Image (cartoon, rainbow, N blue to C red; front, side):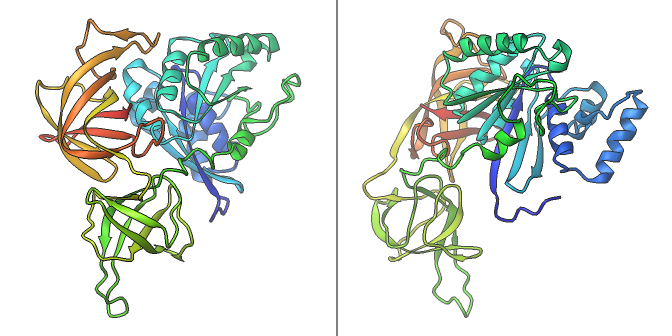
Length: 419
C-alpha cells in the first residue's frame, strides 16, 4: 500500500445499469493499482475458482454484502478506499436498479466526480439517463462516461463514437460542467490503469490518469465564507486556562486570522484571533478543513451558529424551496413534523407544499400526480419553526443541502437541494 500522508482526496461515485461492470471496474482499479491486500486477492481468487471461472472475478472485491455475492449485483452503497502516490480516493459503488435510486443520491451527494458506465453493445439506456440527471441535479462538477465492454464489440472505434454522439445529444439538456469519455474494458483492463494496445485510435489518457490529475481545487466555493459551529472547545486545563474556541468544518470561503466576521444569528461582530488545527495554528483555512477558531471577543456562540464575513451573509429563512429525494418506503404523513438538519443546525419543520414531481427519464414536470413514493424526486416547500442560514445548492453544496428526519423513528426520510 502506498504512503499518502498529505495527498489530495478525490471522492467519486460509480453508476450504471445492472451488469454494466461497475464493480468489475472498481476491482480492476484496486487490482492494477496494487491497492488490495494479498489475503483479499486470495479470497476472490478462490471464489472465482469455485464458480468455475477462468479469470479472477474482480467485482467480488466490492460486492461486500452476502446478497450481492449470491446475486452478482450491487444493492447498497459500497464505499471503498485506495491510494496512489498522487491522490487518495473514496469510491461510492452505487446500485444500478431503478428501485435503488436513493442509494445513488446518497453515494453521489459528496462526490467530486461521477463515473457512469455504458455497455458498448447497448448504448445510452434509461438508467444512463436517470443517473446522469441525478449527477446533474447534485451538481457533481466532473462526469466521466466510461464506454465499457469494448472487447465485446471488437474494440470498434465506430461503436464508441456512436455511443459518445448519442450521450452528447442527451447531455446537452443537462447542467454538466466537465464531461469526458473513455473507451474501456474493465474485465481485461484496457484504458483503466494502463493505456490499451487494443484501441490505438483512442489518443486520450487512461481512467486512472484522469482520476489522478483532474483539477478539483476550484470545485468548492472559495468566495462566500461559511463556518457552521459544531461544538465549543473549553479544555479547562492548567496550560490552557482561558482557551475557548469554536470547532467545525469550513463550508465555504477562506478565513484568516484578523478577518472581521459576524456571528449568526445573533449578528455580533468580532475578529478572528487564531485558527487552530490538530497540527497547530494555520494562516488560512479553506473548504473542507476541520478547524477550531478563536475569536477576539467573548460572545455566546454555540452549535448551529455560523461565522461568516460581515459583508457576505447567507439568507435566513423559514420557507425553503428545495428538490427532494424521498428515501423512505412509506410516504410522508399529512401535516407530519420532521427534524430539518442543515449543516450543524437542527429545527422542526413540515412539508408545506408539493410543487411537482420530476420525470427522471425526461426531466418533465408531473403536476397531476403528487403522491410521494420511495425514490421520487420532487420540488417541495417546507416551513421551519426557526430560520435556517441557507445558500442555493448551486452556489454551495454544503449550506445548500438538508435532510428530513422522522422524529418518531429517527430515520432519515428525505434529502434535499435548496433552490
